[in-house]
Image 1 (cartoon, rainbow, N blue to C red):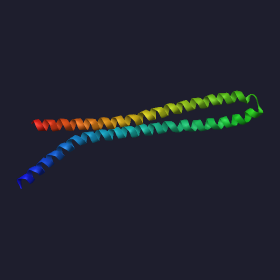
Image 2: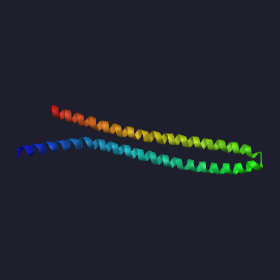
Image 3: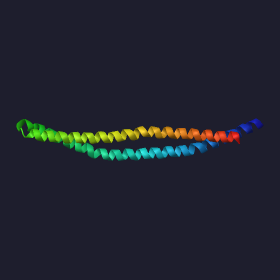
Image 4: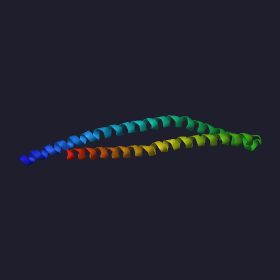
Amino acid sequence: MLLLQITSAVTAVTLVVLAMCLIPVLAEMKKAAVSLQEATDSLQKELKPLISDLRETIADIQVVTSSAAANADGVNMLLSELGHAGHNIRMINKVLGIATDVARNSNVWLTGAKVAGKFIADRIVRSKTRG
């Protein structure tokens, strides 16, 4: 009977120590997830105007292409619109690069949180075994 009580006490203490270590780690992981969601929402808001500009530019290119066949002066307009489309594509690539960096860094945050949790747990276990 005494062995069962000792085992239950050790289990209870272990669960309390584990909960004390996990709560801060989970709180940090929640903050990281919220931050990632906010960055994703912001990125999505920025992409919508760029995509609509790109669609307008494509429509303009189609109009200019049809007029270029009938009018030699339309070639200058075509080149101008193509330059504008290239500029919009570069802007979209830049925004997508930022999104990729944010997504890539989210794994780093989660890994850091896991390592921090393990480190804290190890420190608590070591301090309990010494004391």
